[in-house]
Length: 141
Image 1 (cartoon, rainbow, N blue to C red):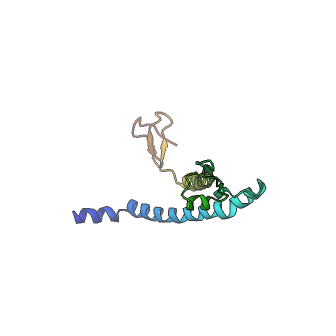
Image 2 (image 1 turned 90 degrees about the horizontal axis):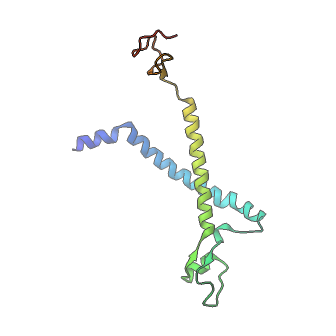
Image 3 (image 1 turned 180 degrees about the vertical axis):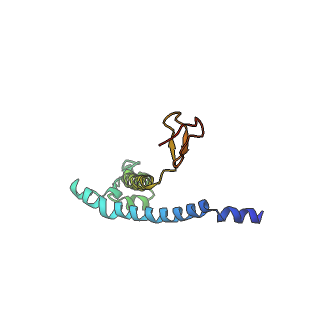
């Protein structure tokens, strides 16, 4: 069983996945910082000095007579809140990460060398260097 496990771990796909997870986690931290510290402050300034991470709804609606100006104050007091500003930041993080991954995959797919082609006569998939189709035996250019 240990031999099988070691063979599994040594396969290229497992190591590639481990590297991808580590790089993905680091990339997520960079994007989170970019959104929180670089992107959202100018957007908040343009929208009237709004701090998105501080946008929330007090679910008690001030029943205790106190209106909290900051999310941290409401959370410290144990007030249930709907933190839509934090959610908005997380949605923007996700969109940026998803777009970056889309671009990376698009570039990788564009640079990928084709190994097969379609036979123009029978439309079967054949090796790119084939001179004759193995399905219909047609000569290929």
